[in-house]
Length: 105
Image (tube, rainbow, N blue to C red; front, side, top):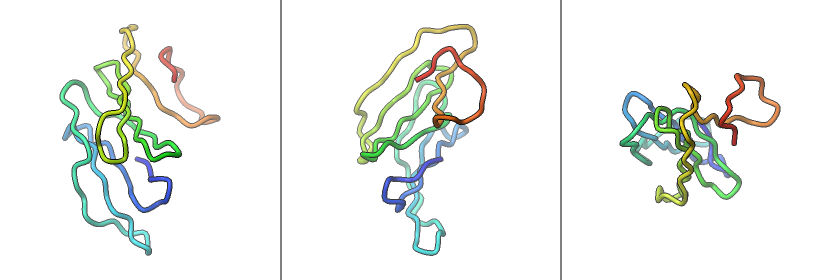
């Protein structure tokens, strides 16, 4: 999950639905207006990060990809990683303790 830079939107990667959803965030912190932001045909959406310009970086498990979407949902860039055992692309914050992956961004 991740918030837009202005905090007005929450993005959620739903692996079971192969979809990234976006919600409006109200002033009291509650969510409304769930809608589909992007669908993934190959692989599973499995974690995301939002950069300072509002682009959504989505790790796609079992496809060896990171797909970058503009705030309007259009694909800006797709990064493909060669298969390396069971490693998958991992998006994580600097300094975040977590598993090490050979395909680091």
